[in-house]
Amino acid sequence: MSAEPLSILVLAVLFVVGTTRSVNMGALAFAAAFGVGTLAAGLDADGIFAGFPGDLFVVLVGVTYFFAIARANGTTDWLVHAGIRLVRGRIALIPWVMFTVTGVLTAIGAVSPAAVAIVAPLAMGFAARYGVKPLLMGALVVHGAQAGGFSPISIYGSTVNGILEREGLPGSPVALFLASLLANLAIAALLFVALGGLRLRGRDLGDAGAPDEAAGGTGGAGGTGRAGTLTGTQATPDADLLRLTPARIATLAGLVALVVAVLVLDLDAGLTAITLAVLLAVVWPQDSRTAVAHITWPTVLLICGMLTYVSVLQEMGTIDWAGEHVGSVAIPLLAALLFCYIGAVVSAFASSVGIIGALIPLAVPFLEQGEIGVVGMVAALSVSATVVDVSPFSTNGALVLAAAEDTDRERFFRQLMLYGGAVTVLAPAVLWLALVVPGL
Image (cartoon, rainbow, N blue to C red; front, side, top):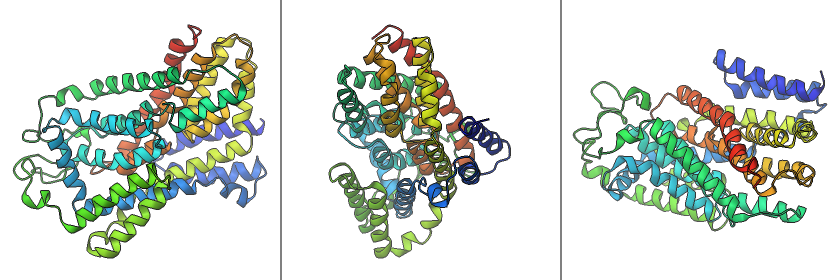
């Protein structure tokens, strides 16, 4: 067996062992990166470490550290109740508010993980307190980010349209944007119905009730936990919860600074978040004593390990190997479907914009044959490679997993993995049928 299919087989083994033996998949992936990288790819330690996602490591640590402090000083509780008041206590509207906010942020130019990093901790805090299923809330945040992700001025949209222009291929920025918007909106609506979103109608702050077990709540007996029964002082927040203390004002200012730094000044979200967290910790050390312990280290290990292994696959040419073999398929429509699936599967473990930037050029010779509509194919490939970002191995999915509060993280990880797997299996085929087969 050559190195490329062997590396894919090892990836499959990682999933089997990680899910059946309850071993952290990130640790397994580091071991696989060492074994495959050294024995099959001829990489030394420096070559393997070159694929370590240092930027994502800092984002995960920085954002979770900042919001751990925000949770400790009560800022997240204050924001949750502010959101409830904004929609007049109608809990069913909050997931859609989060969907819209992340969509607007990415549509105006925010990198998708940056938008999710800002919104997810607030959204998941709300889900924990008011009994909304964490999968519902987290998925709507991610799908919202991708809904706006292909506007003509967005990162994804600019990347794809620039590649098409450089390669001399026809494109339609509006069609690309609408394809992503409608696909993610449809998925979000189906998920909202499937996960009981309609049952949230008519519930408000005063009668939210206790979250059911499926929602992931872990409040103790008598409803005293954060996700417990919303009665008494939980249903009617006390004065201390609504009071803006100096620490909360500073944390809110830090959140605004994080948004401005990432979206306006184009600064790194992780470095900015960890800097703001350190400033808060220095001024109010009593709120930050336990914050470092609340950084989701198992999630950091999981994501960094998997992405390091995927980087080894890219370095040894496995991704290019798969693309070349697909392009040689004699049936154009089948080749188009396989390209969509490669984009979806690989993007579930790696940078979506990186995969888009790699796969579209690989597909150029195939598109130049003129047997497949360029606009429909590019839209199907682009959306397939981004709609799967709900996977816990992608940056967005990892941020949602890291931001989950008061829930069984292992169980939530499995839910995200199963849902991400379902999207990876179904979405490319549906997009292919809707966009490629008609010859758009």
